[in-house]
Length: 314
Image (cartoon, rainbow, N blue to C red; front, side, top):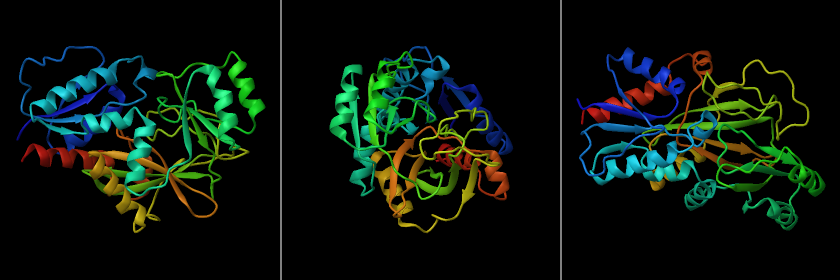
């Protein structure tokens, strides 16, 4: 069996994957990508490389980790190594408009969106956009961070003029039509090896911090989908509601077309029953509490470990 190499920049997110490998009697190698060297003039080891780079790496002080990872993946692919979530997946991870274009090509519906660069451009762009309420979010935020709802042009102007304003990491803001949800939930569909695993319902009543990893801090008090946050015992709950829904096959088609192997894809249902896909997470995490409450038979990290081991044995 070939080696398995996990490419990442967040130690905590790899802990449950290590445990899944240990349960199977396998030890994976790790390649921590924050700073480093890509030896493009040499040949990489013949192994299975799994990219877990996240658009939120800068929130952990790893500003150039995605750029370094792109170089590493380019090197590996140029040498025909087995790569899970390669350069095409990483390109989607750090660019929402690229996600939306690829989703639309697969026949999926995305929220009406405009990209804006420049503080002085935001208010005129929102005035032209003319859809209220609207959601303002950074192109590269991660975990739902920085997602803000504005109900009027005056409120947006106040934010832009305030000391709270800060440029997004890459300078790109997204203006997005607010979707009035049928219920205060979003749904996240998980795929491994391009195939559907399960969907998890995420309660947004207490905030819009959507990272499902057990180590994530669910502490954002703002929620753009409800007026009054209320207590919620379990933020993440596995659901079978969409198991036979046509959107699953559409999302699998999207992943195949986009060259993505592992992803968590988030969508929301409006009051008319229309589903809008708004985020593709190619570095996906799983909530073990939700998995255990559902019986523990379907675990994301276990499925990833099984998938990578199968590839390593080929």
